[in-house]
Length: 255
Image (cartoon, rainbow, N blue to C red; front, side, top):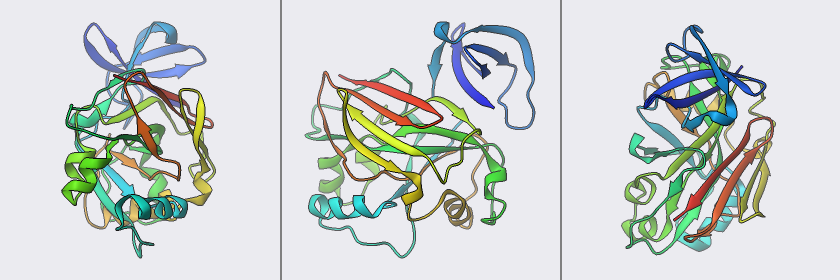
């Protein structure tokens, strides 16, 4: 299934995408699909982030090539013995085609293209074997980062959590294999990141098991699985795109 979340009459509703038509639902598609009998063309939809996140659990240092480049930026990266977790709050969520704006005190604003995982069931102490049974689907995510703030603060909360620093979308789908997905980030049309989730240090299954050993994931929560090498700065006027094969293109505008 391919799901989207959209604004209709100033209210957020979920829908099922069938070709270029969206059949809208009465409630999130976590337990069952409850159609409301209406539909509209995708081209007429104003899409929002396809989640119901109480939190976004992010994985740092999950591609070896990104670890190597971060050594030169932060002088603190190393090959992790276990996943490095940090959180983004719901205020960071942003929409497909939305604007990303950093406060004036931010000196460097970076893109980080990633695979996002949206949960459909409450998950606690989940095994690797059962992990994907708890997943609604997969989406594109940009872990926007105020790099100078991250470095200066010595921890990641402020540099990762500014308003609009987690664009997601345009859809979430269970029709792809998270272990074999090509991911590409483009800045103003030029490819700046290109990798495959086959190169994740910690797979999606293992990540879900690791997270839920410590904290409960709620339906609609999001996991950001980490970014490959090639992160870099954005400035006002730039357009950044995160494309994942089988999912689509998340496009945002820097202002």
